[in-house]
Length: 314
Length: 237
Image (tube, rainbow over all chains, first blue to last red; front, top):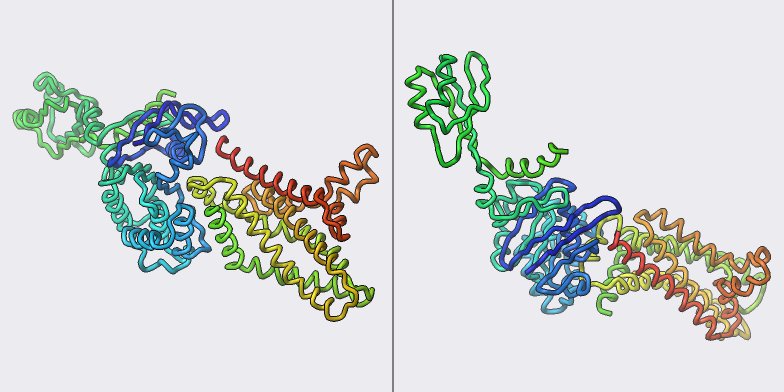
């Protein structure tokens, strides 16, 4: 279990992380979402003991990171952003070196090696130089180094950046598999990736946590009004104006004209779907409906709402 | 200790898997060999003083060159982040790197033993004690400069800058006792004591004085300690 308590990290005058709090439980796959420069990597760096917090603390299984750094680092596997590796080493040597540092030698290393080679699909490259491996393989090598000691906690900073769609699916499946028994915290700014992989999302913006919950919780919290685009022909002004009186749950946001069609942007509360009434009203008013499309809220719009608000207010 | 060994072996592999070690060893052997043999037969003396005089000069450029990449490269590649998040004490990390650089320097000295064999073949009344202490002295000076180079490498993520800083600090230690005439009389004793050359010449004369050994050990310890501190400061930035 990881507990982040009032964690702040300032780089001089720049306040990268401002007093954030959250708890992560074993067996959870948590996505850490935020725009570039939001404070994701800084938080992860503090959690792994690479940086010291300006204020607050991180507790891993009740040990605090500042006084038990080495002990906590033994329990964590970390894949840093950009996945730095020793290019001049062979993959086997790199894994052996990481194993040595983690006190995995001899038979234990052989077993660990077999496990990570299998999990990360490194069989074909194990005796190659790291520099000769493709980007996808390098990412897997980084992941294998992070997992060589079979840690209970995996912290992955942007694990799928720069991978092709097939590799992304492979890494995603691997993370999902690992998540059944480990606590996995992965950061990303690729929303679809987070949505497809994790079961809880924490969104950070300008160093503060602006949302924390499952995908469904975030969706329901942000549903509010559903937007609906209605494209019609042959509509008289009067009938359009009377629409909101006839169907009170609908509000007209705006109306534009394009190629002889009138495009209405409407909103309605999610629990009062007015589309059937709207359809009947259109027939009664002799409208020709060429498009009727509701826009459901997705993670992207939630993310944009949460992270753009401050910019708009500033 | 286990981690120190892992870092040490990784660095040694890194030196010997790249041209770095071979270039260093060959050029070191050629330069020291040239300067030694140039005067050895001319002076007709059964000692290795000319070798022990030239090696500190060769160190001046060579040691900063082999140490410049130790930490600066890790910072530049980003692997420093990986190292810092492994359960690895900064002291093991720094000491492992320092010992690897020192081993390369000692390998260079080992090659120069070929001149010692020349001496045993052609020399008479050889003072083996002086040869031994001479080697001990330059090995210790090599340790001091390797520690300085390791420290310089921790100050920046640019290897060229690390090299220049390394040369600069090594040069200060090298020149200290040659600049005594410019120093107020009250300070000459201290400056002289701080100079590597002063202690080196003491040892090379065949006298192993604990003061000299403590000096070398303290300077190595000080620079390695400062390197560890520099790495710790990074966490607070």
